[in-house]
Image (cartoon, rainbow, N blue to C red; front, side, top):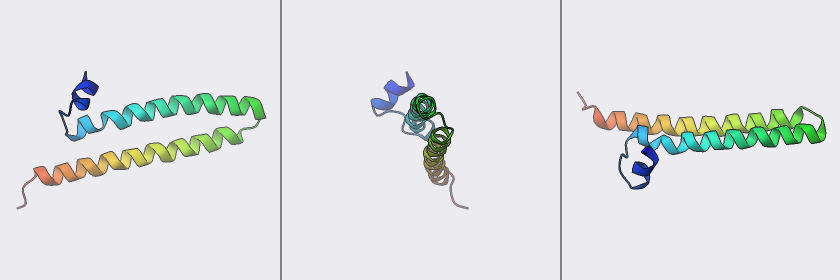
Length: 82
């Protein structure tokens, strides 16, 4: 239901704006686990798992910093200056 509201253009606040990045991160994490498992099974080495895990960590952290930046700017806009 939240996604429908977001796609219709409503709820442009930070919580609604974090729905898509969180959902995307979940999908990317699940697919990367499957890819890493396949690579580890094929090459019989831990290197693919470590590399894919590191790339996933960078991907998720970038997304988190974007959401935090947006929340910070919304907070500044909502709090009147003294």
